[in-house]
Image (cartoon, rainbow, N blue to C red):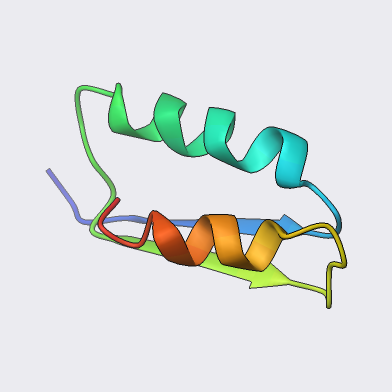
Length: 55
């Protein structure tokens, strides 16, 4: 299997980011790299993603 990366762009997606990361964890093939690009969210999106950095 070739390694692959997942890139997620966000802006005030705190209400969705945990659900998206949960769905990635449930996949049978995990990405070799996860990149989350946050556009200065003000709703805690960055903090939620950072707290889940073990994904």
